[in-house]
Amino acid sequence: MACPRRSSWTLVLLLAPALAAQAAPAGGGADAPALFATNCAKCHGLDGSGTGPAVLDRPARNFKEGGFSFGNTPETIARTIAFGIPGSPMPTFEHAMSDEQRRALAEYVVTLGPPVKEVSEAETLMHVTDRPLVVRGILPSLAEGGHNIPRGLLIGTPDGLTFEYAADDVRLLAVRQGDFVKRTDWGGRGGTPLEPLGRVVWSEAAPQPPWCDAVANSFADSGDWAVGRPLSARLLATSCEPAASVSYAVASTDADGAMLRAHALVTETPGAAQLGEHAGFARRFRLSRIGPLTPGRPEFVTLRLGEWSDALGEPRELAGADGQRHSETCWARATGPDTGEVLRITIPLPADAPAAVTVEPKRAGLGASVNLQRGHDEAVEFELDTFVLSPWTADVLAGLRQQVGQ
Image 1 (tube, rainbow, N blue to C red):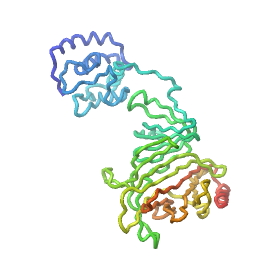
Image 2: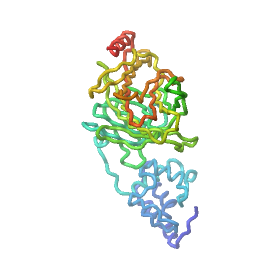
Image 3: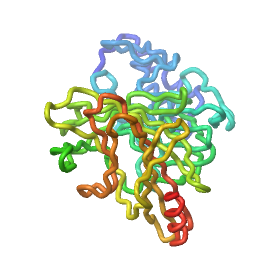
């Protein structure tokens, strides 16, 4: 986009080489000041103050005050230089400059702003003590060579676990154990990925949308139900009080991802779990119905739990620490030659009403799943506990069967 020039532009062109020669070179490009004088100063001024001689329809960015459109890291500035800003006078330089020139120019632009605070290695580490912590940011891929997750979420709990979510669909990706996270992204908006520090003790082997809509057909008589389409999870909020939790809406969407109908409000609280001598992690769910029901057609929201090969005994009732009755179901499966997983599902049982939560093993090809009747007016709760065991042998499996049957 051509910019009208004032008469003082001639003076700028005359002074630019001398000013560029006096400026310190930027890393990787000794001609960065000259590049700035030639390509940027007409709008942003030779000193980066946004007072160049070009006449614009809006003030140019003032780099001296730390004004950057998409972040103050060399990476984000270099992208802006390459691709410009649509709808603004900022042009593209993708073909006018090499990658090395754009990088050198971006590093030089950073030096025009306020000094960047140097932080020690210790200041980049976040530790969880007696209170949980929640951090959002870019997450590195769990798979080597995979793509970063632009919108990630980490929840660190005082028991030493870190729960790693994709925030776009609030899907649990991994659970780590150990230190919490190293973060340097506060040095620049839109900057570096978070660096989770704990060792991965569990990860989702086959990520898929975990929620779906199921419609019951004469459920009271036959219990038959048909699987509806997958549902989306939309992040609403995170909290650290009284415990770390993430809240989201489970909703149906159209082909473009626009929300059509919200089905349930979910609050998920992660933490530690124990099964005898085995340690694991828990996810406690609380669901509230959203929106009106269709008259004469009970509806269910289903959480798919994947394929589990073995039921460790029949569901049993037991009294919880709160004095209420609970239904407990345990499933097991081998995940490798020497490892396996146990899933424990715990559901509170109302004293004077039918349970609003049911467990359906291997129904309609879903594997084990938890179904929540939307006709229930009160909030419903249940807990999923996962235990990764190694070694995984017939003796271990037999011991688990005996333990959960007691």
